[in-house]
Amino acid sequence: MLSLLGVIIGFAALFGGNFLEGGTWASLVNIPAALIVIGGTLGAAILQTPKASLKRALLLFAWIFRPSPRNFHKGIERIVSWSHTARKKGLLGLENTANKESDMFARKGLQLLVDGSEPEVIRYVLENDLNIAEQRDYDAVHFYESMGGYAPTIGIIGAVIGLMHVMRHLTDPSQLGAGIAVAFVATIYGVAFANLLLLPMANKLRALIKEQSQYQELMVEGIISISNGENPKAIAMKLSGYLH
Image (cartoon, rainbow, N blue to C red; front, top):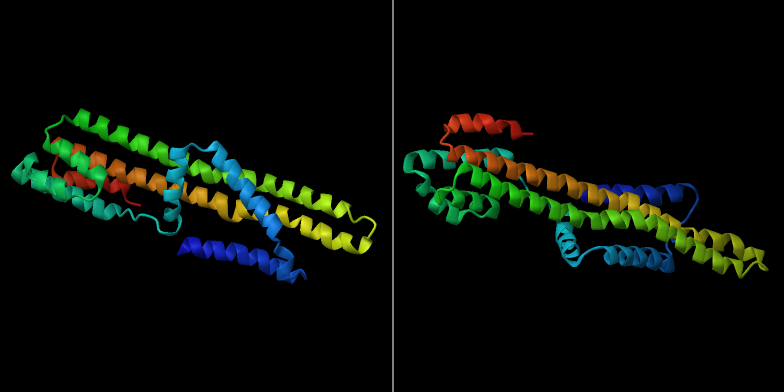
């Protein structure tokens, strides 16, 4: 909801400022300019992005408006509950919990516990998965960052193309003012899309990825603490530092 509100406020300010300056809504609407900026930006970004990163970037797009909730309080409560189960029934008592766990990262950690893996092995496996997933997501976010970088430049190209058409009408001064105004709409599109949409999207995704990684780090520390047989209260106190 906040993401949608941000988009609305940003573009409302753009159109509202244009209106207050005496412009019209129609002055900011130019289909050829939009085609040049959007098509050119997409083409350039797709050209530089590997297929796997592009597919992941499209999946991450949903996070902008519907981010995956990461409740650190509940995460600590779950870990403490697993610790109580392990102290009462042993690590094998977590087998049913592991099979029912919906979080695949946590499930893998619990399964390693049940299998009797050493704490060092558990940490290595989980942290390796965490780092690979984090880098994969950051590589995907670079797709939106690259679009934010290309859009203003493509906008300038659109403006130059528009000016080329204006130059054909130099003998008719009455068309020059309107023609130049339309030509610069492409520049507005490029800068506006980059700074009001694409770069903010990339920054928000980076923040969400960081939050997810911190949540997974919480899981790693909790599972290692269970493996070491630590007291549930001590585990809760140790993990409380992850609370925002």
